[in-house]
Each structure stands twice: as C-alpha cells, then as structure tokens.
Amino acid sequence: MILRLDPERARRASIALMSAALLLAAGLVRWAGDVPSVQAASRLAEPVPAALVPSLHPATDALAPPAPAAHAEPRVRRVLVVSFDGLRPDAIRHAYAPNIEWLRANGAFSWRALTIRRASTLPAHASMLTGVDADRHGLVWNRYAPELGYIRFPTIFSAARAAGIKTAMFVGKPKFRHIAAPGTVDLFEHPGYLCPHVAREAADYLSRASAGSLTFVHFSDPDDRGHANGWRAARQRGAVRTADQCLGHLRGALRRAGTRQSTRVILSSAH
Image 1 (cartoon, helix red, strand yellow):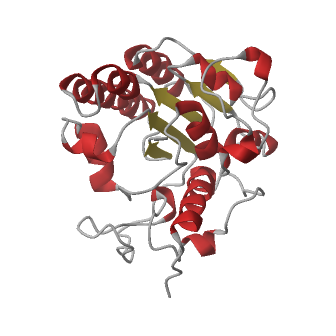
Image 2 (image 1 turned 90 degrees about the vertical axis):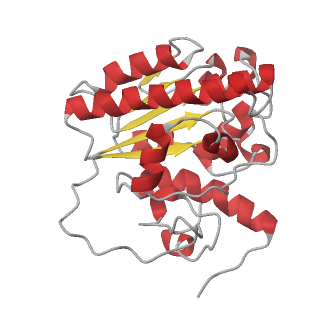
C-alpha cells in the first residue's frame, strides 16, 4: 500500500527522511530525533531519499523491488555526503557529468526530492542535515555571522558523535561553521571557495586510515556560477562539470584507500 501525502507533508517528510537516510541506511547510528521511521519511508511514493531504497526504475523514478543479490554486500563502515550547492537536476542533463551519472546508474536516485521552499544555501543545508525546517533549526540567515551563534537543533553530526562516530566537514563557504556546533564535528575545514581546493583536502583526509565514519563535503561552484551568470548558462554548466571532476577526485581517494566498497556515497543539492 502507498501512503499518499499532500504536497506540504510530502515536502516535510522529504527533509526528514533525507537527513535520516544519511546515517540510518548505513547502519551507523539509530536516529532518535524528530524523523519518520524507516517503515514509513518505504511507503512514500515520491520523493524518495536515495539511500533508503534499494533501487529505482530509471524510466518512472518509482519504487521497484530490489534485485536478488548475487553475493553478500560489504558492510558499510563510512558515509560520504557530497553536496553540489545550487545544482538543479536539469543542469545535470545539460552538462557533462560522468561521475554523477555513474552514481545514478549504479545506485538509487530521485530527481524530485526537496528540502525547503526557500532557495538559500545555509537554511537549506541546515534543513537537509537536521530533518526540520528553518523555523525549528533557527538558521534563517545566509551569511557567516559569528555573533549569531550555532544551529539550535540536533544534526546528523551530533547524532554521530553521541554514538562515538568521528565526523568531518570540508566546505566551500565559511558560513557552514554555523552548522558545526561545538562538540559535533571533529574536523572542520574551509580550504577555499572553489571545489578543487575542497576536493584536494577532502581526498587527502579520506585516504587516511584515521578518517572518520561520517564526512560531509560541499562544492559551491554551481551555485556561485548560477548566481553570477544565470542558471543553466554556459559558465554554470561548466561549473557543474568542474564539480563533477572534483567528485571523481573523491571517488579516486576511496579507491586508493581501499574503502570504496565499504563507503556509502550520498550525493545531493540543498536547493
């Protein structure tokens, strides 16, 4: 039986389920926050968080039964969350993005998952990483303002740290510091605004044996070019291609470290 939700409830469920998926699907943490259960998630027709569903039919983007496993899947020991800031799904289709396409072809996906109605980087990412809207997590501004403090709602990072899991954030914008509340993120790095700098630092970290089990990486390039040159403009499509190459750098780091099969990779965009 499929549970059909009105648009507003579906949107809120999408926010909550996406954040829960980051940890629940990998079996790293039992989420105790304000999110629907995994059983409820399996009854949502659309949007469907990628990590909660074994497979989606590419033609219909609807639930499909999982294919029989030819062999036992390796245990997932790490989660890598990569956010392409400002990446609209239709921009992927108009840019050369082989690494994104590989993940789509070999995983579960949805073109229509939502976070919040406001297309704003900091509030939208805060919702994606908490499971609640801005009126609850409190990050209603979109700039780095240290005097305003930190997020006021538990994040996936605080849930991970409570379970003894090491966490890290590599971001292209310093305002993400507002999401990294004290005691929740072991390593916070802002190597620069462009994704090659972020990817280089993140890849170096992922290649280490001491890397944590939950890593968040943020690429700002598509959003910056979209604001500056227009959405789906040539330069914005070029930024998507560059960010895709940065994603490939992370995939290469996992391959070299021998952790690719034991890492759950979740790719998303906050708006």
